[in-house]
Length: 443
Image (cartoon, rainbow, N blue to C red):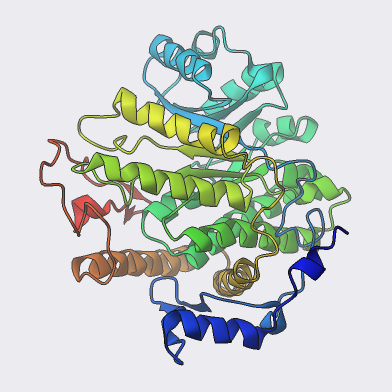
């Protein structure tokens, strides 16, 4: 259109190899080929259209690895608040909203007065998510905030931890008002050490079981799809994390297609991504900013709908500092308002390396999902037990790689802070009986 093809002629794959060998000063390109023992993937650091096996797609087209966003790459900047007291949590929420958050995640520890919790908060202008632990809390949200702002409220209700989730009044309410309630908690599985394929397979199995149960209860495929959403963790393997988000969208669309939804919008995969604490340091806190930034970048380049960057010291005995919380809140703001990463739809799309990596992640995750599905899915004891043992083994493999120096984490197992902070992480928690990992604490 503007003569770029004439100014920048297209190089052949052989031309690229010649330049690579010149830069490496070697005829052997093995340094650019990798086998990731934890992710169990083989991949090359370079790709070219002549050797690409991936058919290019455009955003808005099945299988939606490039998403359904057609105007921009916008996302919600969420802040998680643990609710121990309504007044304190409300003050915290109003404070972070003034500092740039446009989404809130309230983690409910018990039964609270939601009107008091939400006093002065304009639910119609932000997105609010409630993390719940029982059916009673779900009903409180459905009968309160969800009625006031039905398009801006979602619920994190884990089908693996909450009994009776598919019974009674909740299903009847969702029949008339679809709301993202049933979520697949890939974040907790990732924090237990799961690799990318395991995390995707896990959330797909949970979401597929939720779809089946909702349709069985009388909802249409479109209504059921509107009630399902995903929560994933973002690790430090930059390009693989981008590929993970894209692969998850593609595979969920593939599964949804079998349910034959009538509306194209049902294929929109609602993904909340959290940058967690597994690879963070309490002793050398300033190294965490680089990790948080690249992980947040991977999430938004992958195209998530909502991003929560946890304060790097949120799991420490001293608790979150005001500086760490402000930095966690500011990182997505900088990516959006100064780096303009919300302006380009699927900016990683079209990169031959990212497309090839997405295809490899998709294949590995689908294989893991099919294996679990053949055992009856994640809700079946046998399938769940077998899967969780694999996650446990992967987590131990991660720890061994750090102990043996095969993988380097600055400030944790390499170049420790000469003046370490007097802080440490809390004792381990667990999800579904598997301990969650924090490298600095556990190696």
